[in-house]
Length: 245
Image 1 (cartoon, one colour):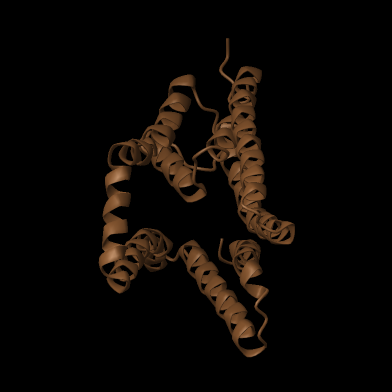
Image 2 (cartoon, helix red, strand yellow; image 1 turned 90 degrees about the horizontal axis):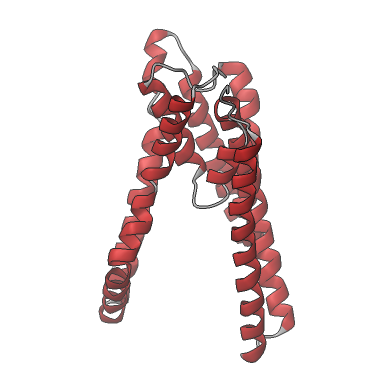
């Protein structure tokens, strides 16, 4: 039987896993609302929290849909849908799939039909590495949290500095990926500038949102700044790609 990346069996497996995830979300949502009612949290405050959470969900959801479409050209719909609906990361999944295909002599995004062994290899690379975070969390998560709490109780300023340094270190890995193809300019290829321009545009939009908050006292902008920045950044990539290739 010929292998198909869009096999109905893969759709069924994916649907079952996602159904479990949705059930968990509904379960904890109901528990959270009941607990909030026990604590006497005002309904208006709960509505604001849910509204803000929904807004922050829209932009990442759009990017995830784009990621599924991008990956589906090579891997079909079920696996990208599954990976980006559970613990997957848009940036991680695309990089992992691209590296796995390159190692096998394939070009990411070419749409070349995959054999079953090639498909399993790519999915294995996309899946096994990201499990490290879950396993490490189970092993050292409690000790790490205890250490951060002790540090915060001892010196709040240093704890904040240390936490920010860890976050910046994580972001630095993605910043490096933004500039990794700029060197292709020496070969006359300009596509490496696309993520750089998207980065600059996104940064400018975030600065603009912050300025509006400060100058015009638009405090509500704080809830919308990140989604707006994500959407504008993704939208800007379309004309940039048409221009730079």
